[in-house]
Image 1 (cartoon, one colour):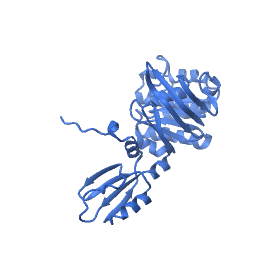
Image 2: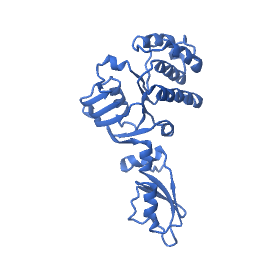
Image 3: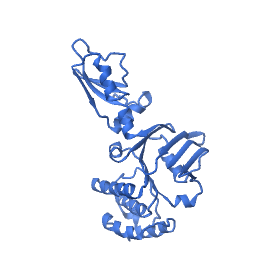
Length: 298
């Protein structure tokens, strides 16, 4: 289990993390989402022991991460800017990883060679961005980590390889109980793989719930009111409303059953609940003036 409690990290007076707290259950796939500058990558660097927090605590399975080589040997990470030695090949980096990860599996390394189909002796910097990311996954999966931390993990991969990589990760989750924390702006993809979601903004985790709880706590209703009712009644608790013709689309912070009950008082001609995507939940949870999509007149 990953536990982050009230963590603060400042850079030249700027609070990149401002009391961030989150909890990732063991064996979960946890999606960390938020706008640019929310503090996601800074939090990830704390989880992998690169940064030391100014205050607060960060533990994995009850152990502090900072300056804990034994714990770090159970954590594998793929950052957005994955590091490798400039003249190294995949095989060179494999030898480097083997020196830090006692569980490193040469058997898995050889098996994955057939999946990624990359010349292990070719210099990594001469590979495409997508192929470099494949090498990063190839090596990370061979470390047999208990915790896998990913920052924009499949950026640059083609759709077939994205599916292949997620299949490998989910197999480790189910077979080995690997805990995965993944930060990504590809919310559609996270929706397919995550069972828990945390939303960050301004250095804090605004909320974290299972994906099912998030979807149950907010609903999109498509409503046609009876003749004579052209506007949404002001007493309805609506987060966002839009209209096309007579069809009103209402975003409401409640379950579908409660929303239908509230709307029944107005005898609508149509009232259908539509599932929200993770992207829509993200936008409306962060909604407000500082995260609204602004109209630009050119």
